Image 1 (cartoon, rainbow, N blue to C red):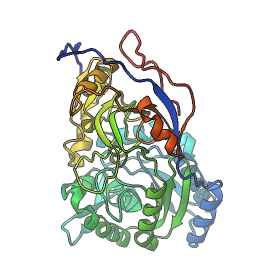
Image 2: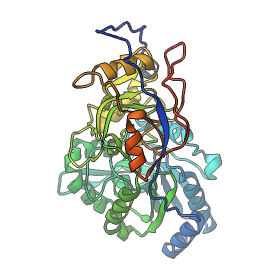
Image 3: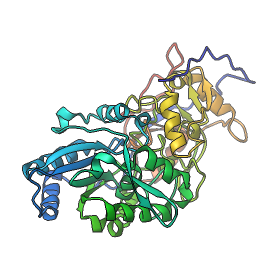
Image 4: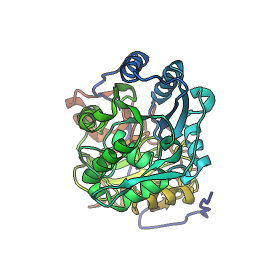
Length: 434
């Protein structure tokens, strides 16, 4: 692990005092709340309908990615149990491209940080970075697969289907991407990203079709989350259903996803970023700041973004920090450069790992942000604070938004206004509740 050691920061510029900070209101955002209540029944019915062949003694690989999908533990537990009841020898494959520093141990550690251990899942986790070449597509992309999955008798591909952080297309994050990049391990991820996100719309489906023609894919489990982190959709798909069905599931996912329900923000304060919240650490679908600058991202106009911290589960991977304008010394000192750069270089995303202006603490970060707003500091700045770009139900909004809140039925004040206060070390005192 290579981390930063930063001496005290003594930056000074112009007037370093606040003009009078606004009070912040706790606000609940309302989103579509569809939810699958009985995940086990859906999985049981779906897998039973697809597994007519005998699985007795068959070695079945089930994929597990690096995302913090709140229902993923239950989904994997139930899937493992159902396959074991049919006589299969089940094992979990970390399918996450280059994440975890592109090492066997690192990828197992990523799953552990998500609570996905062998004890919890009831089956072995077999982590290897060895990959087998499946051939080359018409686009010149060599496609790879985890060697252990390739040698298995069957593969169950499990992933959340959602909007991608860097590009817009019919296939973004989902089963197709898991087949090509997740199961492709480091070699597959490098090969795909080398072609560029701007070509993923054509490259990924062709690569997935090649994978499906060469691999013993037993089933796919497509998951859709609502904005509250609940599973709003669980579908078990046959291999031939991956390509025709995934675009429909992606459209549904985008319809119910969380977002910020205002048009303009002077300063967005993000308490934490991490790989479990978004592949990009900080979701461009929320901030509008894509690491590749590709079109199609709809979000409020944001003047400045402050990132206060890295999540514990991201284990030092600071991918996405480069999309912020300011961060804190305590956040910067948690960056694992090896893990972050491995991820960024593999994804060919050179803006994401950059380090923004580092402030000594939250107080200075907010001062820098307010004083550098285009057009000068506002008398009544519009400030929004969120926990991360995934948990967007409860947020904080400054008093300038009161009329907007009153006019929007999907925004409701849920407590008393609080001043922006700092402790003796200059860090924010209040928290954004879940």
